[in-house]
Length: 119
Image 1 (tube, rainbow, N blue to C red):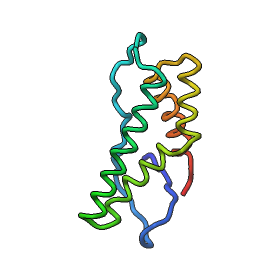
Image 2: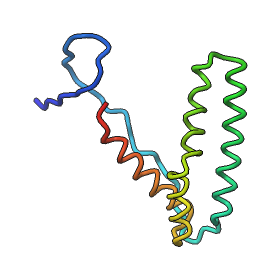
Image 3: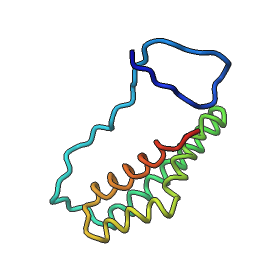
């Protein structure tokens, strides 16, 4: 029998034994077009438009639901306002990496780092 020991902050004391199912799967991606016509300006415009939409969603949720429901939008906004995250993507694009590939490379690197963080 294979045994994994998990660590973290438990909700209550105790031990759990049994079969586990891992439900996280890689995000499916469309095939990247190496001849993509997207440029740095397209990426920057998309970031701005996404920020605007997320701000609107957040405001709408705060007005209609509990503040906790709007926090998910705040987190996504924080990611788009992270100069280091967006800056790394822009640097990749400026270095000649296609926009989609630059986004995937930087987000994959962030996911890798965060997946190794112990809570």
